[in-house]
Length: 272
Image (tube, rainbow, N blue to C red; front, side, top):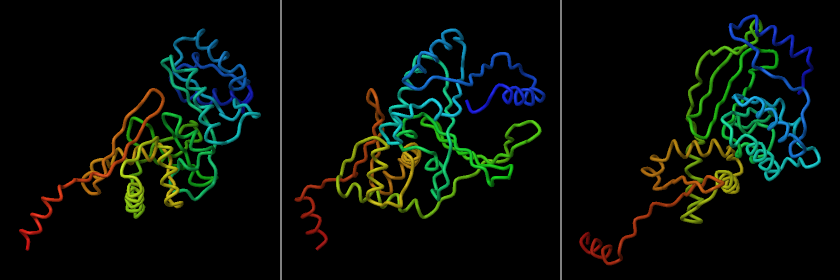
């Protein structure tokens, strides 16, 4: 919705010159209704007429949001993402929402996505593409999904074919922030031996304990799942994942062994 028909046609011709596939099943819409103001009906009408649709791309997300109701808050972002999810919930397709990033020093690329944690936490996956420089042709693609591993790839843009080429996978590097993560979890459970809530609520709780610890809800869930056994064996922290009708729940608890006082007394007497 940021392009006109002429520009779309020029791009499509350039892409088609280096592709053996057909473009007959691609549809472009340069104007759309706003979310909660006719967009759902517009989507439904098109998808009913084209039931084999597999992918819907919205470029950009801001074009379909209601400016009057847009607040940039967690509740507002989550509300809009939930409304979009309901549109495609009963259909076998993917909706790809394009948005922008902002300049920041955040170590986690997901924290550079414009919007609150409600936007990131409400979707099933995030792809963040960051160019190495404004005029350069290389970039890093970070992929974080709910149900798969996270990846980072180094890419290069081919100006002739208008396609991104894979260069290599970027391996995750460990650093001192891992130790900080375990320390903050320990502090959290010192206050309450059993903590339960969503990944977004856990992000907020950890941030209150250490304002320098910033991580997205999806990345936090990934980190906990990946280090679940390590937390249990090395830090005595049990981490469980469950789900109710609407949300995913994380439960953290201190793995404490309760020993009877009489047994402790007998052990001390034996040692003496």
